Length: 229
Image 1 (tube, helix red, strand yellow):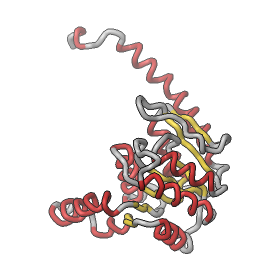
Image 2 (cartoon, one colour):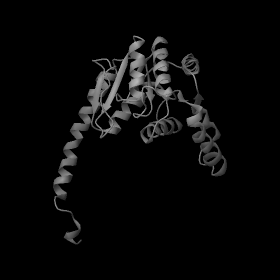
Image 3 (cartoon, one colour):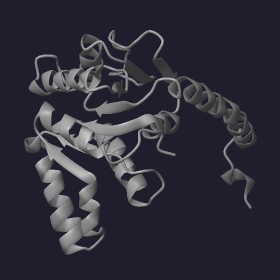
Image 4 (cartoon, one colour):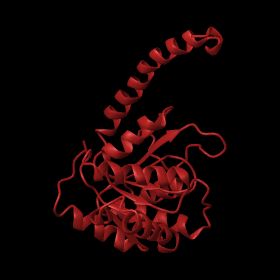
């Protein structure tokens, strides 16, 4: 093979990749040790760009407060926007408030409502996502962007393929999510047959705090609270 096709420093890159295994392992070990002591939690996802005067910020805060009053803790991505609203609601409700932080350009910084002993920092998205999936007893998904959609569809895929135990996935905001749900039904299911009708049972669409709590309580009357894998 023509040596000119190999970028300068290729061997050094491969060596760095090998050493990265230990950093990744360290993030997993630290995350598992801390999260395993926290207890049953519900994760709240949504846009980091949502401002405190936005109705969905206020709704996320109210939902989080009711979640902790119902006996669960709250996990968020630890940043601003909907994440801050979730941690703030948990804090005001006197419950467990967990933040899984990651360093991002432009928008990510720790919010002040995370319990001081329950703030974890990650360099790797995939390690952080494992913590969400393993230790969440449900996903409450507020309006958000690509990151929110990524977390939502990964959870649906893992449950659909039986890689993790089923847990409630609750989309909040009919006006925001109805277009996505209609596309899933009309295009993925009816037009192309890329999913099964039963896959739609994994998703709940609601607009109020009471509906969120009702879904969570109804689900866990049938199932035990435990890590998902």
